[in-house]
Length: 138
Figure 1 (spheres, one colour):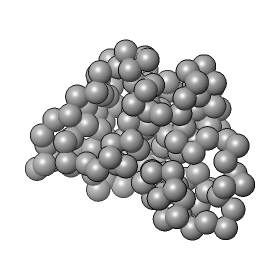
Figure 2 (spheres, one colour):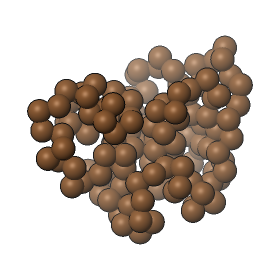
Figure 3 (cartoon, helix red, strand yellow):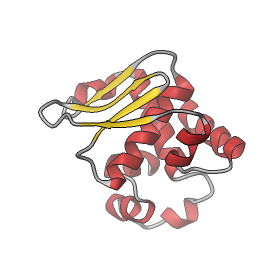
Figure 4 (tube, helix red, strand yellow):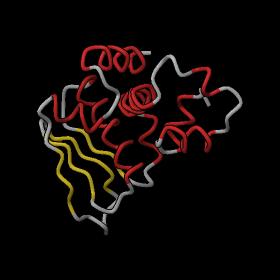
């Protein structure tokens, strides 16, 4: 899994799994914008990551990790839309989500996940349930 491997290398190189810290260290500005009437979730136009203002801290963390997945794995502009589930089938979106899941819940935390439900993992690691499910292999 390229997302898992790249997340591990990123954590090792930068010494943190925190997406806010990583964006600063990589010189990637994060801009929040007002887009309530659109389906826009995240937009990465190198070097800027755009995120709507109407997200919770957990959603913001997850979206930043997703955008970082595109930054490390892909070579062009990226957009992620709310409610557009077919986009999950796109290889680059799957890779970015896998990167985000492994960045926010790094290798080595496997014992901490045993017996937990997806919502419990999401709450413990402050990620959205989609990333928790990916990390659990669901």
